Image (cartoon, rainbow, N blue to C red):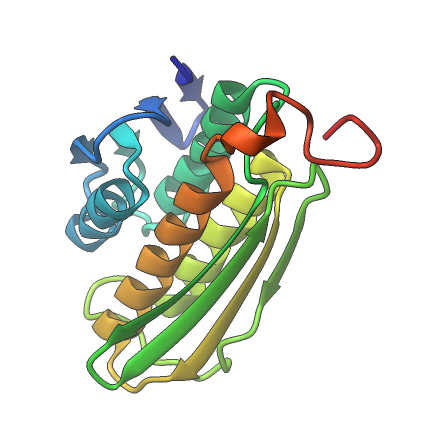
Length: 195
């Protein structure tokens, strides 16, 4: 099975994370930031990645280190679980509506990290999680997964809806990208023969 368990400890955070790419979307999440727990829970549910995350972070300062460092470890763990990426779809995209909000996320597991995060700078925040930290999380995932990720907000006003739609769209995009394509017959999905 395509699984990974990682631990990362710094002066600011202590993180234990394990996942199974071929799961059913079961999760146990405790980051100390309830809204971020909600985002990771729905990420697991909609990606079908089983996910366990425990974080002891310096949330008395703010949520930045906890959220960014969790993105680092999540990206590393998905990359490790993918191995050489033989047979995967590689690309995934998803449009996710949530009431007035519409988000689009497109992913390429290319081994070339890049984040294009296009929601407007004045995008509303969720009640207890600044929207700037959503971008920091996505940047950390893209960099450590070594993926090309494009995030677009096509409509939206409510900060909770916007963050949730973006996280769900990331989940569903990754769900497609990591899926094994039987027509690939175990080949690497690149003309370079390596990803």
